[in-house]
Image (tube, rainbow, N blue to C red; front, side, top):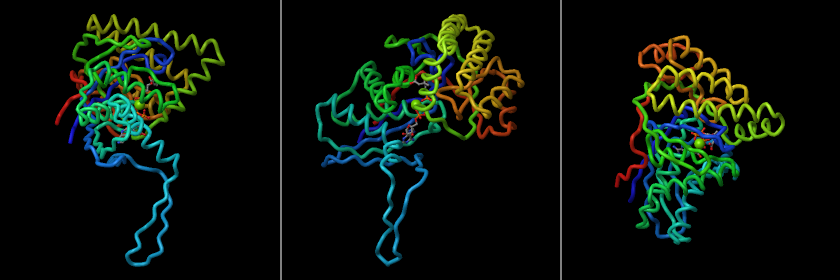
Length: 328
Ligand SMILES: Nc1ncnc2c1ncn2[C@@H]1O[C@H](COP(=O)(O)OP(=O)(O)O)[C@@H](O)[C@H]1O
Ligand SMILES: C[C@@](O)(CCOP(=O)(O)O)CC(=O)O
Ligand SMILES: [Mg+2]
């Protein structure tokens, strides 16, 4: 049995634009996915994921004692739920050359699904690391990040950046521009998260921005302007200038909103944080629903968010210095 964990992340700046070659700065946070892997003696994959739920299935049951229910779940629902794990295992089969190996996989996670905190990247990084080690192969951090990126790229139909997976594999604050991925020095940031209890569909949201960018030059300019914000943000991060980081995050949120990836509840939480005196606030990740990230060293933002209708949960997030952790 082999166990690895990997952290989720928030984007300080640059989600969506990073898909088109602009830089982005995500930052790993101490909320982790843990994946336990056990080699099987057949070729099957058995996945136990406590936090994953399926919306809609058919059960056939005739009531005869001893005749259990026959549950029928559509292929598309299963592949939407299992796509990341399936592809992560395909990457491990490829890198180890063990094409026919099977695994029992158990996933446990503190990261809400589809909420912009990078649950997919954390699950994929931890799964690849644990499954490869289960076969006696310890991947170097860069190889692990690359395999995890390939997984997201496949599952998201060729629309993925290296930002989430590199950040989850290496930890800390990182800068990603195309295939140039590096770690950044970051001050201790007073990160507050607000979660609306919902989720967004990463693939659909990315496709929406792609279409806008193709249709309107000003949408393409908006994506480039996000790149400019990121470059300014890097400087503010290097200077430890939290007030400037906040201003730039506010600006970044406005441009993401213009690109159609915010939502009423995300905007409401962003404004609640700003009204409470946060240095700045923005949605994080793909958007559509899920989480915002704000910077506030005082308890005010958390208090305000806890009273904001539509905000289901709010918590502080510590920067995760470590990326993947090899636990057993
Ligand atoms: N705890 C988990 N167990 C199993 N699969 C998970 C888990 N967390 C995330 N996933 C996978 O990741 C998908 C969500 O990823 P995504 O839409 O990119 O959102 P995000 O990365 O922002 O959380 C889920 O549909 C599921 O396939
Ligand atoms: C929208 C995007 O920039 C980030 C998606 O982040 P998340 O999966 O919502 O945590 C897509 C990507 O970079 O692959
Ligand atoms: Mg994701």
